[in-house]
Each structure stands twice: as structure tokens, then as C-alpha cells.
Length: 218
Image (tube, rainbow, N blue to C red; front, side, top):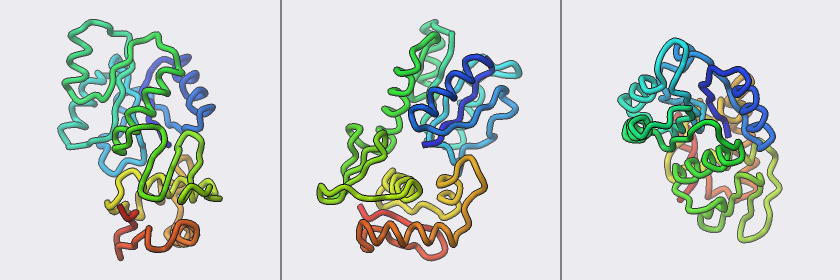
């Protein structure tokens, strides 16, 4: 999973990136509002960690713009502002969670996984999709109770398709999400990974929408 961190504090930003990496989450770090994406439409991120007090603007303004544009990407506010007015403004403005500094990084990561689980409409850390079982944190999956031997990219592919079964995930989105910190994969490489995944979970479970992308049968 790939996290966008918007935080101006150097020490906290470095510590959070290190903690996310230890827990198997990749991340990108921005320190100013001007460096944040103008839109989250088609973003490669799975969740945003957003500080409210940035040197060149307010996190509230970023959150308002993203929600006004219709983005449903989970956003967790991380801030030293503890006033009830700020918490209400953040949550009513579209934040999925509001965490007050200082906080334990273990709790923050647990909250990240909780909002990601809710966005995938899963009730627990064990995702169940028919005969498929996926545990994102353990990078583990099974079919009819039998563990699947998936490569890291095959597992990430399965996870991306499983976030919204029955919905098409465009090839361009997969190209970035399968390699979030490097050059996007070319479509030929994606087709190879899809072919390998079909061989392991059954070809009928992954459908091709010609000219668009792929979907996991619900």
C-alpha cells in the first residue's frame, strides 16, 4: 500500500516514513501545500496523512478541494490542534480520521489499516471474497483455504483488484500502483502478471475489459 504524507516537520516526517516502511507500507513525503497533488483523481496513493498547519497554507484547504472534486481517497488528519472546533471541522470537511499529535506510530498505522479496510468494504484484517482470502498485512492469500504462492507484484495486483470487486481498474492505474516508487510498468509487463495471477486463482476470476483494464469477479 502506498501512502502520501503531507507534513512539514522534518523529524516527524522521517520517523513516519521509517515506521511505514517497517510495516510494509511505501510512502511519498511532501512538506508544503504547494507540493501536494492538485487532485487525487486517478492518484496512485491508497491513503493520505495530512497535517493541517503547513508553511504555505492550510491542510483544511487541500482537504476541501479534494472533497469538492469528488475524491473518496481516505484522508487521515494528523495535527497538534486539539480543539473540538478543529476536530469537527476536519471530520465534517471529509477527513476519515483525526489524530492528535503526539501519537504512537503503532496506533497511527492501525488507523491507516482501519480506513483502508473500510474503503474496501471489509470488516476485518482478513478480506474474504468468495473462495479467496487475503490478509494485506501479512502479504498472504489463499484460495479455498490453500495458500497461494504469489510474487510480490502478483499479490499487489490481487490486492488492487480486490479493493472494489466488480469494478474495472484501468491499466494506467495498475502500471503505477504495482511500482509506486519507480517507473510505471509497461502494459506488456502488466499483462504477464495478470496471466500469472489467472493461472493461480482461476482465469474466470479476473476479467479483461478491452481497452480499459481488469476487474476481479465479485
